[in-house]
Image (cartoon, rainbow, N blue to C red; front, side):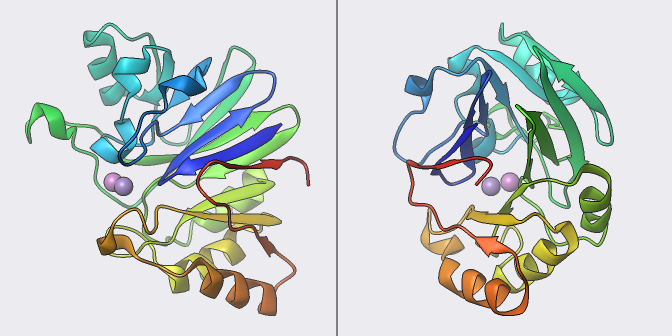
Length: 220
Ligand code: NI
Ligand code: MN
């Protein structure tokens, strides 16, 4: 499987199927990735992104799935703690400490609970944390699902920053950590090298800093 960070929280997993997580990049479009499946962690515009425009089968919580279906998009709903297999790809929905309103439809449109995903494809498990604060049950995600890769937000302000992501990486134990959700805007400026230095000095985990559009072949 090949993992590509397209920027912000948007990640493409390309294996048996092409799975696009949080289809948004700043100042551009991700429709050219032509995914088979889309996964949306929560309702904020920088995550729901182009899910409606893409129009592909989308895995999301029940509230976002209902919103997508009302816009003519096939959706496979689920909720936190559950696992479902969609077209041969395993999706486990994990908690996230954040918020999730669907912004384009106004404050009255609930996006349900924010989430992350552990996605299993071709024998590799990738944990995408979504937007979240640090929470100690990340230890359970590590113990239960043994992700090979953890995609963690480090931009601060709306999510974990570098210091919290270091502890998250320890809780999860994935051998490869990839920082996301930083430097898209000034408000979420962060130094991924500080994360890399901090984690690699104190653990045997590896931090891979990708440039937007850069790929990684898994397993490494
Ligand atoms: Ni958010
Ligand atoms: Mn966000």
